[in-house]
Amino acid sequence: MELFMRLKPLISVFALSLMLTGCSKVQNAFMDEQVKDRTDYSLITDQEHVRVILCGTGTPQVNSPRGQACTLVAAGGTLFLFDAGENAMRNLERNQVPVSAITKVFITHLHSDHISGLGGVINHSWVNGRQGPLTVYGPLGVSGLVKGLAMAYADDTRFRSMHFVPHPELAFAQAQTFFFNRGVESVRVYEQNGVTIDAYRVDHRPVDPAVGYLLSYGGKKVFISGDTRVSDLYLGALQDADLVVHEAINSGLIHQAADAMRRQGHAVEAQRALRVLDYHADTLELARLAERAKVKHLVLTHLIPSPPNFIARYLFSKGMADHYRGIITIGEDAMDIRI
Ligand SMILES: [Zn+2]
Ligand SMILES: [Zn+2]
Image (cartoon, rainbow, N blue to C red; front, side, top):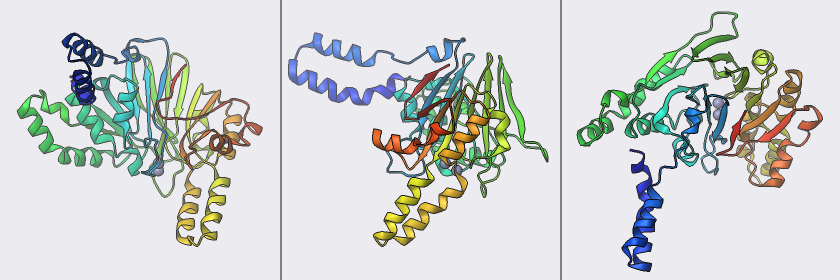
């Protein structure tokens, strides 16, 4: 079924080969090459490693070349998707992820840039042959989200199942809501085949609840922060983590940009830029927290402002190494990390 996804670009290649050669053998060779299954099944067969694919390192900013929030973790033969912002499917395809094997999605909070691609993930994984139900885990509100998407996709499901897609009952996700008891900062939300996932409260106020997720497998720990200001709330999750995929904002650059906007008479835009500072993770504060927790590798995502080139990337993480001795990586879409 995933063949269906690859047909569109074929048309131009096929037409070009036809025009250039008129030779059916060449055309067949072209076509054979194009439809070759390039799906990376090692993501579900490799039991030894934990793989982390950044399927979206951007923010709500829609004109960014980066996809919105999305991180895929493969562990113990299962794929776990953390958030699904706009372009999640496009980036999963780009990394040859077997999308029909995605059956577990974890939502950190209900800001649009973390959920706007979820409908596509549920729908595409079904159309491409998903064999089991897809569960969406999340804090309070996730059930309404899943119900709303089911309403939005009801007609699509009816049309597709009338045409050729089997198992319309799999076209809709099921929600798994978890709650925190008073005074408790983490809750186990998944445990199967040696993989555990704990949700930790983070501080993204006024967005509440908002969580990060700690995945543990084979003695390896990966934490995905979601959106948060730097806080001791989730220090326990970071402790000795092998990999932390953490959102980041460079406050210094945002202040400089706001000054420049004001100089050019854009006071409202300057105010808007400064408004996000109080609920995202300042790069230098994050470096200090990662050092305290002895994080081994810190990967920055949800980058504000999005650095478009190597000079901007240098400026983005400037000063962090003065506070943190581990590895710092500025995340890019399609980055594939194996631990
Ligand atoms: Zn966000
Ligand atoms: Zn957010």
